[in-house]
Image (cartoon, rainbow, N blue to C red; front, side):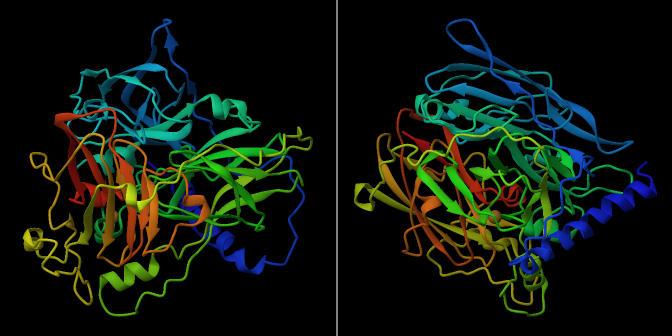
Length: 518
Ligand SMILES: [Cu+2]
């Protein structure tokens, strides 16, 4: 049982976090950071164990045990969870370009699942999507050649209708790819020391300490949003930098929440990589939106030795104030400020090398390279299940107004069906995928099979930190985002890839489709 004191402590985190977020505007001109304290409140950040595979000279073997367990998010309170080689989340898998890796996935979670390699360019049958179901007690063993540049990717359950719940319970982890380019750059790269995985999630707990999943109406509409924020499965976390610069590989592994990340004292940071790998050059920013499924690598500077907090900046919604659930939800979304991760630099910091001015080369794609344009309309249901049959050309719009959401989601008027192939593309083709969000709520759109580039948002070129490779792109309400992608290396007339909203409760409720590369 979650005792009352701990529950109150847990609940008070939300309040603390709010206060932390709210001090954001006030601190704009103040430099009043307190001196570092030797003993820190909260919990030291756990670094997921590194798994680099066992090599036999030909291939590297990774043993992954999907299992049930109990996790103490709060002292003395055991929460039933799922994990990979542990009780919650999984190890960080690390390998290099051209490696041949054998992933031995053993399912012991008591129900069917899958394991998807998010962002990895793999044959569809090795992708770990809903068709690669692993029954309890069974092993799935894809053999994969790494054919893409260095990047921070991840892996997670992709079980049909159960992705949200299984990821929420813990089936996710980070996957790091290296290559000659990344190894040749003077970037912080000592795992767990100055190269840190930052897996951001939020959860809600019941009074008995178990995870609350899909317990209120809003969960269906906005996806799971929890009051308890965690990094790498640690609640109220802090990290002690020992170097002047630290590379943070930030993964938004939340089921649905978007994060507007910044440092509490507004210090700038350098963005060096997006979903698919390094940018051509570091981009200096002081605030960055990361939607679920997206990753970013940043270099944070702690050389002043001052404590600082990575926070979620509260956003003010300009959504119309009208009766009904949608207005209430839209106006509340993103309005909460809270701490994500506190940093207490060590008294002595080892000097890091300057961040290289040039990182890699990326050939930007042009719209005229594409042989075809496909359109995808993201739609939220209105309470009537009949909406599913209305096609993309009917002009049907999903307005919530004063009504209520039905919790069904569509792409081009259809909900994901395992036996229906939505799109067929030709091997070798380059296409433009035009994604129009007909709803007021932003949806992160993820495409399997490889990395794409963003051409434009409502006709406007993306900002510098979005000029690299991406596999997930946030499409804001009523926005049209065009991405360009090539379908290369793997064709398969039977096994499809997925495209979907990465708010997992939307994915599970229909906002997903399948395509074959033939
Ligand atoms: Cu969505």
